[in-house]
Image (cartoon, rainbow, N blue to C red; front, side, top):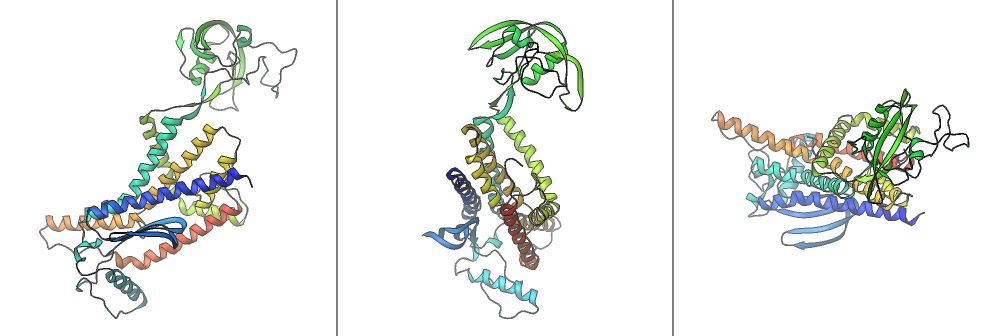
Length: 434
């Protein structure tokens, strides 16, 4: 196995661990600010690999790097009518017993003097801020990664710079070849003395800012003489070129042919073009919409993953990918023949996309996700606001313990989905080529 492949997997897992750690800090910091007692801050699941206690909180790393959590006391309120810290010994029915067991476990963490430091007794907006902190941290990380990608590295784009792969002869579109014959006529660019590396900056006095500008101006001009401004080795020059008319593929639909358009005979060069912060916002906004659409269609997408895993069907490039699959992509990126700049760009984009997806997934308003707790806090705020307006007694805290059976059911479904993704990523993974 290529050692760069292994390094890529390790680097991605480290990036994922850092993202998880910061997600949990997004919960930890506001929880401590608002006075909630936090007994544990853990990155990972399973048995503990390392931990250290500082004050009332144990900070640690666990062996399975696929998640993390903070433990806040008093996540569930006591049964109505019970005093905080009092444990009930009886319950009726399996579901009620499940709920009461969870209440008892939550109350066992509450020590004398901690009654005002439990999560459920905090103001509704404090609960919302605490539970929103994790996804918000993922969005901040995604923005930082996207800013590094777009502003620091740039996006691949075609620049109006003559490529070394440019042919110096005119090859009719009807002939499926790339090599010149002795009978082929030279292109207008070759006749005018254009060379690889020349940057086109103007066309008949009109500025060229992109390859799209150059293509539009050349095609719309048709056959005839023009002046093309270029920069060669830092020096501006003007070349007199006589364009010819050629049939070329349509820019929007390559299967359609545009007749007798202007033809110069140059290919563009792919460069990494740096963007502005404003473009980062637009880029992230567009991806957010696509991720939201994928989450809405997640059940359908998971059916596709099932068929890919057990029927050998092709994986959907727009479908979900697990941690294993993303780690394999990280390895594939580093082991590829791409330039170092492109490897870094794709790797940063992978981490940015994962943080964006994790943040949005956690906002789904279902327990045990952060979005379920956020929804509970917002509902409590609505109830209390309505009671205040109607001058009614203040309602009780929202009791999320009542939906624990549904929570456990959703957790089981999530574990099944995670297991299916792991299996699909092992037997039929998404790769950079598909």
